[in-house]
Amino acid sequence: MQLYNTLSAEERAQLIDEAGKDRLTLSFYAYAKIEDPKKFRDELFIAWNALDALGRIYVATEGINAQMSVPADQFEAFRDTLEVYDFMKGIRLNVAVDHDNYSFLKLTIKVRNKIVADGLNDETFDVTNKGIHLKAQEFNNMLEDPNTIVVDFRNHYESEVGHFEGAITPDVENFRESLPIINEQLQDFKEDKNLLMYCTGGIRCEKASAYFKHQGFKNVYQLEGGIIEYTRQIKEEGIKSKFIGKNFVFDHRLGERITDDIIAQCHQCGKPCDNHTNCANDACHLLFIQCDDCKAAMENCCSAECLDTIHLPWEEQVKLRKGLQVGNKVFRKGKSDALKFKNSGDLTDKPLAKAETKNIRQKIAVKKELIGKAEHYYSKSKIAQFLIEHKDLSVGDKVLISGPTTGEQEVTITEIYANGGPCETANIGDQITFALPFRVRLSDKLYRIVQNA
Image (cartoon, rainbow, N blue to C red; front, top):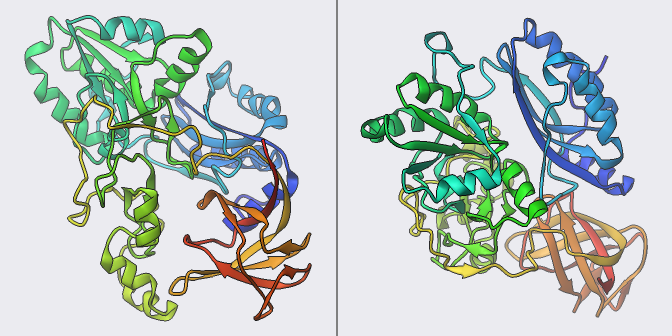
């Protein structure tokens, strides 16, 4: 029986595209005593694989932590797979504000020692003695209380692009680093201050609130469902958002826009920007903020050294990586001396700019028809290669290039080479090339735009 992925990310993206069905991005967690995590893991894989559910899930003896993509028409069937287990009956599913059909391209369920690496010895305190959960309006009200201290329990690259007004944003690379730092920083406020905490989906605060109550803090509160649930509530109830900027998420989107405030800068030029990218050098994959101009000039790279590396022959790149701990570090922490405008720690609440309504990292509403697929990108010459599979393509056509990493990019075709020579119209079966200022991937699709919505 299949208990692992058999498709590559590119193959899965193609199947999603061919299916033509909308998918929901969601997350959930539950603390519970699981006697046999391996058996639990295998049961989930079998059930979810049958529904074409994808995502990154951790299970442990203490519970489950999941970020997933589920076909919209299978949502209730997916919920039924959770209801089989008593500890997940009626569980809250944090559904994303912005959906992307390609947010996850594999179903990965791993057994871990803990569902969140917190560095705590759970035997030393009562993990069930949690803080008081607050809904969005209650959270806003407490933020306005001068007797309140609000703490962001996320990492530096998360809080840099968005956080609650007035929040303490520790300059940390992981959750376990923040606990002792905040505990020491707030020693004088245990008795008389409201300790208000938040994170992305609520899971980090479940443990943190119990830890801080154990440390002697009297008035401990946490945002129910984290930023994701807060966003849903403020939109549904018309509540003013006290969160500014973007909520960083751990999938291909790398962020959900909560307000149109941009509070971060491009790490390379300092221009207002809050779009994260991963360095294109496979031996680096540094996570950093990069504006569109730097993205084009640096070809998704974080430094001149990495830019030089991606232009080397593939065999030489592989040799340079030999012996390095590179692996699958898609979310390597974003700190480097090459990033001159990187900010973390004590962050501003003042917006640097306003985001445009149309964002290349979000789906662009267009009427389109599928033309073909990407096959290669020649970095030095900045030439993209596509295979025409479904319809002809002509000079002057406006096209949309779409993929899980590339996002949504609109361009107008000014010149086409088909099967090695120039032409005005490429036909089905032709292998075409044309200039593009950005890299394309094998999972990218080429569409002709018929009409903007």
